[in-house]
Image (cartoon, rainbow, N blue to C red):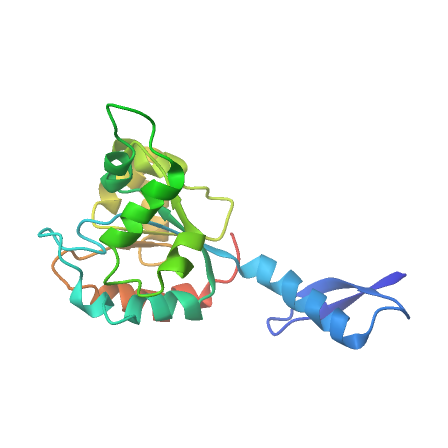
Length: 198
């Protein structure tokens, strides 16, 4: 077996194994898999003031499957909940709460935004200690961050310079009174164009 490089649509070259025993269809599958690895997207998000308004009602623009459809179009791999809701569903005075049950409670909370519950559960990760939430953001990945308090928590963890550099790009400081339209616009115009980690 030998290897060759194949250019993608951006001009980047991906190494694809070549072999007389490897059919063309399989080579295409490997190329698609390699390219998908480059563009895997992880979205870190808060809930109150982002997915739900301060009355704990769903942001209207995100309902009717609109948010989920956009995330599916972007082929988002991981949704990481940094909200205080993660701490709430993890709290019990009796016994530890199983992770699947915690995730199920978050999925129920966000049910109006994610009609395909299984799709959400398959991608959802919960992180705790929301007062230091940005400690969980891995800047080495193709990351994105949604929060109405992004200016406080991201600056607290990574500094004002990095925050200003990424604001409007990898970071959206959500308008908690905007019904979610800014989120859809950001996903469509900005996130879709960023295909790899920096």
